[in-house]
Length: 120
Ligand code: 5GP
Ligand code: ZN
Image (cartoon, rainbow, N blue to C red; front, side):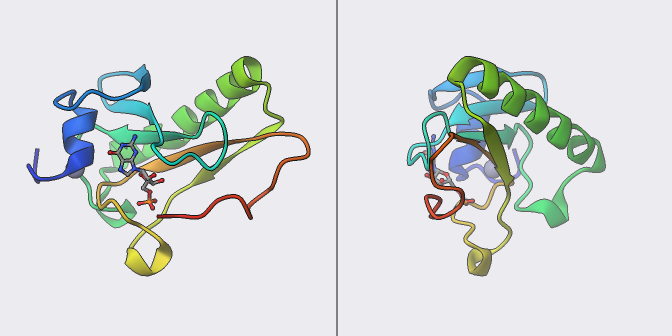
């Protein structure tokens, strides 16, 4: 762990309990504390990268397929009609936790498309 004060490092590595919906050797996926929609999840790499500019290419190659897998699972389990994969880099872009993560936001028929999502 590069940054021992990072909350997402602690969550991703199981030091702090979380509502985990998926885990493998590289990632933990948790439910967002302030969900934009029911089932809003966050993909956290277990290794610390502050944002996409620091991301290990091996992790980068795995993160979109995982997002697709989670979105597909959400359609089946939550009945959403679609999903957003959202990823913020830097304060000006709405990043509030400086440990790379991807939001997986289920979208429901008749629900807001992006207006319901307020970063931070
Ligand atoms: P960002 O704005 O950095 O892209 O997203 C950070 C997200 O992490 C926000 O949606 C916020 O609700 C969520 N979040 C912040 N702290 C915690 C936490 O301790 N636990 C969980 N589950 N989510 C968190
Ligand atoms: Zn971290």
